[in-house]
Length: 425
Image 1 (cartoon, one colour):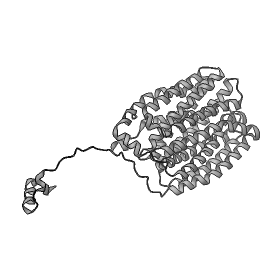
Image 2 (tube, rainbow, N blue to C red; image 1 turned 45 degrees about the vertical axis):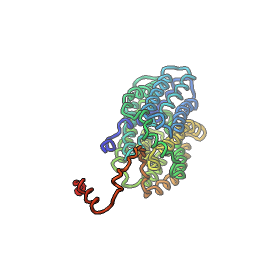
Image 3 (spheres, one colour; image 1 turned 30 degrees about the horizontal axis):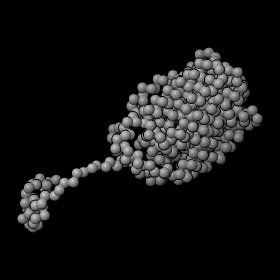
Image 4 (cartoon, rainbow, N blue to C red; image 1 turned 30 degrees about the vertical axis):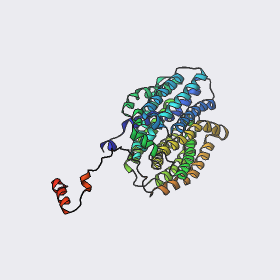
């Protein structure tokens, strides 16, 4: 019982490592554009390739974590992230940068898949999610304060992600191994629980809405650095400080969401929060000075992780094996992958303010299906727990012949006298 109530810190650590690349996307894309002979659109395309490979890993591994083992997959993902991002950081050859970003994205997606599957099996997925968001927000905020002081170059944010992956390798020792899946009980469990996805319609609607939700978020996030530098006329140090303050405000939002828990359900935080995000995106994309840019970014990043934590919790509630949590998360990564490129194309055609209006209207539209799914599942009965069915072979014990000789009060009394403790059991 204590294992269920103990904070799953390895999952929190993996969540942090898996989400760090998307959180550092603005500075990564901006430095690729500034430090390499790439246009803004080409740099955004590399960011999209990174996140697309992350989403691909999630889709491929959604139902295979138990087969390969969480420990093995987590270590593989961390090593892929370290090698991929490290390669992209220490080379200026464009094909190698692209290849490294793709390999690193596969690692991030693998790490996130293991974390999401484990979190879905927790008694309180929302609490574990908020802890993971706290970790990645704090780490990303510290990096936004540090990276501008390390000098120019595209490699600093990529190196930070690679080093984080290496440092978290020891945390995988506390994850289950694949060998545990070869016991007879585990084989029986895997056979008896190979069931279709439950709540298929709600899960598909949520996944499609989450794809569009993340697309809108990261269309702005991918160009936020350029908005601050070019439209608002700020320096990189100032923009980094604003991002750090925004992520710090996100920490407060996540803490508030963790304290609030399920008191308001999921529909109100998801619906009202998404509407607030739409307004923040419109404000931030139209910023022309420090005050408007900081207000939009800080307000947006305060609300964004709150809504994300409730959406992840909603997806986890649809299937305790974690399949919907991974699939919805992968759909989110797919939207995130298209975000930098979509933001670059929209801003090039209609400008940053026009982009903000389009993204805000799109968010308001998808608020309806997301809230509907949350409303329909708020009073749903808990999903049945999946318990392993252990087959125990019992040798046949022949009955004593005397048991069938005679029946009557004498034999019954003799049997009772032979087991005097039976009356007290």
